[in-house]
Length: 170
Image (cartoon, rainbow, N blue to C red; front, side, top):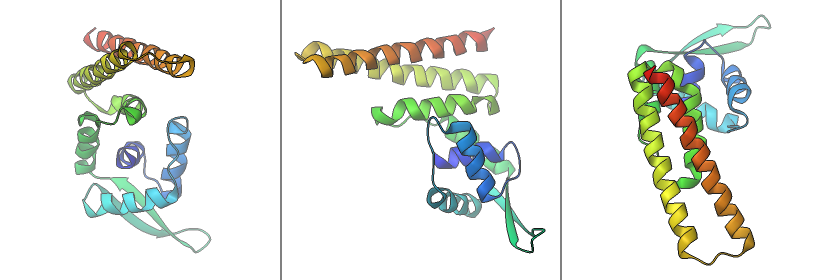
């Protein structure tokens, strides 16, 4: 997910590593807050893969600065990451799906609709699994409330996706 976040921020402007971190925090802090220890190796991987290029300059204070920019193949990789099937871990699904939705404006309309459909199918699958779990067990108060809340959260998320699908078809 960190590569997606970095490429998304670099698709908007050229940034230093500090700038990448700051922009990710400004945009996604309610969903994730990656550390420098996560960002630096990810930038290195992206550069090695040709998705990001660097330009080294001297700052006004005489210190070297490295600026990162996205390459055309980086734009393709960003789109690939956005449209890749969601992972199997239901705990991570909502966060990664919300991040993908927040970045969806880099996709064309067809790709957006495919993303919405893909996320909706996965959310519906998790919703069914959760309902089956609740109906198959005699849950005590706290677990019952947690799973009821999760069911509501997935219903709301599916409604959001249906709204995006409707808007994308209009």
